[in-house]
Length: 154
Image 1 (tube, one colour):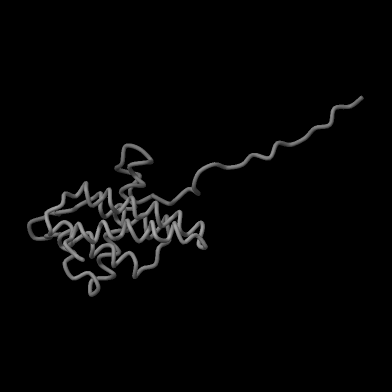
Image 2 (cartoon, one colour; image 1 turned 45 degrees about the vertical axis):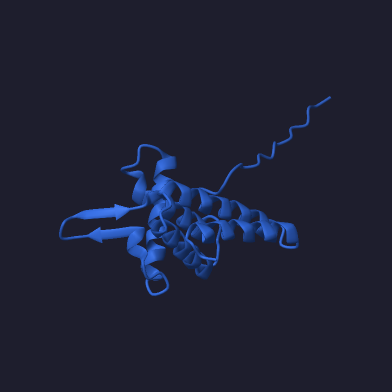
């Protein structure tokens, strides 16, 4: 009796590989290269939405004459992930960037705002996977409200 050869169908796990050529050269790991890539996407959002995000210098300020940069990397990374990974709408990302800026100006730390943005990302992901779930949509609204209150916005 002959053995029947069957091919195993291997499923790929995780996310599709993203292009991080720009950051891979100077990052010690792939993970750090991707984090920098997301951060640069966040910076790109600030430059493209300059009119919608008036105080963007709170998150990113570049002084070419003094060759200095002031950056809140964690917040920019979360905004970049919202754009690239989560595919949130441009207007939503600009709105959340403004809430993040307000929260920083109100006295919250970069880490606190970054954590709030991450919670919003996770809630948005769950809500988008289950668009008919009213509970998940309300949970997303609650996480956005937390960031809004962090900025002193009622």
